[in-house]
Amino acid sequence: MQRYKSILHSGNRIVVKIGTNLLADKEKGINPERMNEIAKSVSSLHRLGKQVVLVSSGAIGAGVAALKLRVRPKTIPEKQATAAIGQPLLMEAYENAFRAQKCTVAQILLTKDDFTNRARYVNAKNTFLTLLEKGVVPIINENDTVAVEEIKLGDNDNLSALVANLVEADLLIILSDIDGLFSDDPAKNQHAELIPIVEKITPEIETLAKSSKTELSTGGMITKIQAAKRCVSAGIAMIITNGKNPKALPEILTGDFKGTLFLPAQKRLNVRKKWIGFVSHSNGHIVVDDGAKSALLKRQKSLLPSGILEVHGEFKAHDTISVRDTKGMEIAKGVTGFSSADIVKIKGKKTGDIEKILNSKSCGEVIHRDNLVLIGEE
Image (tube, rainbow, N blue to C red; front, side):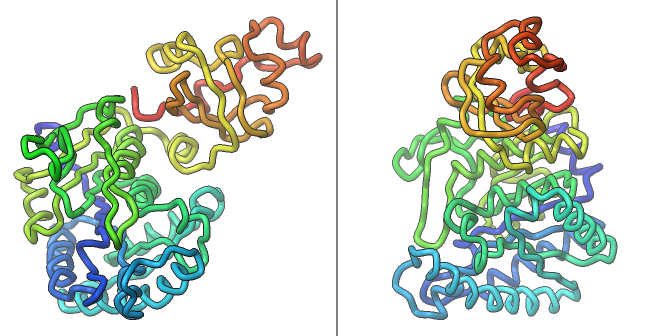
């Protein structure tokens, strides 16, 4: 825990993600008592000099209650309409709760384009930094009313990790309705044990992430592990803890909390590599053999064509692509020096043969190590 205490001591920027089940009931809607507890805890961090960004679920949950729906909507138009009704109700509750703490809040609704489009990414970053400098608590949610793809595939666990990277946070706290990552499903195995610290996200850790969807939320431990991978590789610590405990945030600040801490990589990525690895959209992927995987992960080498086995998707030179091993696990992302059509021609070949095969001069590396970001492993 010494490393964690060092992070707490030096870290002044914290992202807190609140799950739907902590805020909204499908019959009663938003829980004002829980909202007041959250506002008190976040405001206390604020008064200690911490800059806090809140990522909040709950818009669709609040809309479900307002419309008196028996079940969460399933079609995209129904989700969009429900979110449009619920979002102002959610922000009204936050505004009331934080005003009582004499704390100013701001609403920011984001879509995937705000991250993957470089210009919009920079603009969003500048907006966040300005708000934080003025002592405001930004409250973030996906723009569910227009973001068709995000509603279908998105979740606020990964959104909170993207926001943590965007604002260059020191710590991401995910407040959920579970205590953390367990050795097995605690609902089915009473002997399952809470894992207090994860030093490295291994394939074994990922297998523990079993889906635990509820009626109002979208996600589970799978999305939380995905979020952890985005954070730790970028040098950001992450904690999963039970948000039903009103003292969860104060206990985290003292270092005496019940939950799972994911330790960050020792070295932070620069802003450009963060964008490549954890924000930019992959336009395709390639599969590499074990030798190339070892060269990337253990020796931090550039990716050469000799280690490439398969090419999937269509992409141009200078696009971001994903690198996967033979088991299908993503091990890296990077900016490719070749198009998919050219990689098909040179895969498995030696670097010296590229110029003859393509009939043009080239750098030789499919992805140069300066344009490569490892995912989840150092």
